[in-house]
Length: 248
Image 1: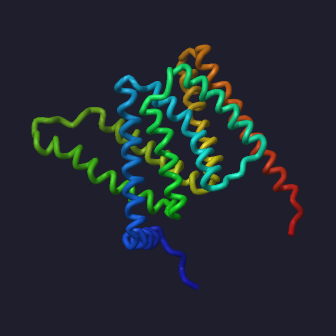
Image 2 (image 1 turned 90 degrees about the vertical axis):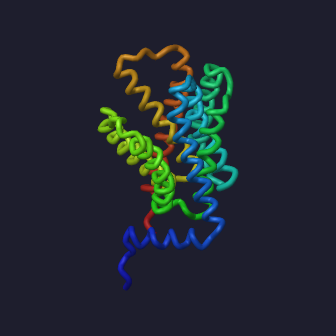
Image 3 (image 1 turned 30 degrees about the vertical axis):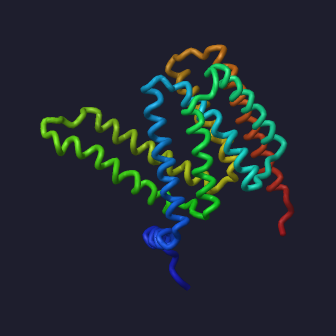
């Protein structure tokens, strides 16, 4: 028997497969560009008066993921999951009214992430090795952008906030790895719906920090919480059905 391939061997295999296929090279480059745009919008938006648009984009994203999963990958949703979609739709509609419409940052977030995950799944490259390649393609120019100003200006000091930035970068990397792993293990529609857990957790954190929940916020978050409860009930029912199945 052959020994199981290690991470390095799997990375070499995936890299060779991509290098031999012009189609896969294009897909990896497109997905890397999508990730760069998403990260840029995520950082640029709050600093330039588009925080509401960023929030709206992430509220709309799961519904677009459900649509993509249903249309292109024929994902099947149970009754409770469809009810969760409807509840989430009410929350998204409320957010659209609050935001005053759909601006371009919303379209970038809600439109490009589904393309990213759909391309990975369609091309059969939804693995951590491909994600590592994408990160390398992003990190190299990022290092150049960071290092060049300090190399050309000896008087420029290192920011005192760099330890905090390293910690945040590490946490973000761990979160993104978990996000990619979840996208491989779940149907695209269910994966998208479970993304609503993040804004609800952020809401809980804001309440712990004594922020006030407004009436407008309630119209957005209560339907989202209901959607998550329905997803939990659906998962519990599916687990019970699985346990009750007679053994073969």
